[in-house]
Length: 403
Image (cartoon, rainbow, N blue to C red; front, side, top):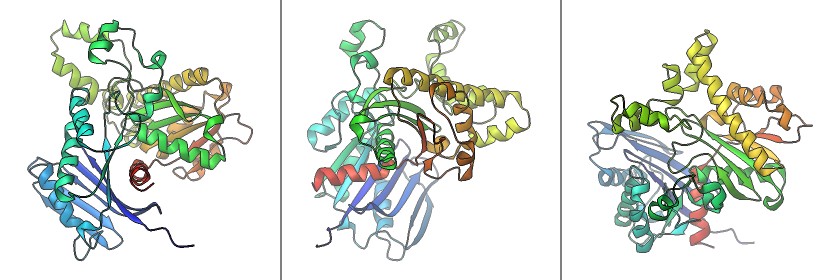
């Protein structure tokens, strides 16, 4: 049998002040190298790239994403340490796009109609969609004849029913402004759900999962028969779990209370997005490792912050257990979910009564490795699965463009 022809797929994640990229050989799913430009628009930025041929690090001012993309193009084909031999080796480009609104329930090939739809959704993701669009436009200039695919954080959750996505607000707010739960981290939830099925040897149609993407940003999704039926993030990524610096769920009347006491809307928005969560509650750090070290010293604020984080995760797991009726596995992923051995134990310690029974020795044996960490007799399996959103984007791009 002839070998399958491999295609080089570039994956781009263009943020408000960063540009991350990775090149895959598909369908082999082999990463050929990756890099990132950080602090775009600041006085001093960095470009870091690694591949089997070597490591590149450049420190300079990257004025904008156009400048950053040009430097990425040069780094990709660096004669000594580049990922590619020629710039036109790229045969497909996949973009992470934060918000597809209600328009996109799956990944799509990018054309002018798709770009117009992304522009229409800027008001739903003002910090992210403009940067995503810039990445698409600059890619068109560097690779004018290469097809591009958009992969949306929100798409996986478009299978939710109105029961799950509507808020108890006046209907006119949904009809006029499309205010509803959208959910995020969809690419990660989709990737680890598919990987869980492989590890368990099960089919999607008869498997229910709860996937926990826990990191500085965190969300939980209930997956029934391969479809997202509920998720913790909402109209924005602020709703749901307490996170690194985001508050998660709280009584919205608190905002009015603080407005009456002199806080400005901007101050409140900044507070609940950047100064709350683990950082705000502990007053120490948003990094789990720092808080666990402080907890070991008996520092009360650190102990309480960790306990609140675990408590919020358990609340959502319990709610989704009830919603799904039968849960075959719970999956931990993300920086905290994959590496936070002690946090996984905090979360699972009080879930035995609903059939989630951790094997604490297995959980500690190789704390970040992929695999089962549940007891053999646990009705619900517990899995640790490293996420790989970049690979999922490459898979989507390859599947759409080279079926």
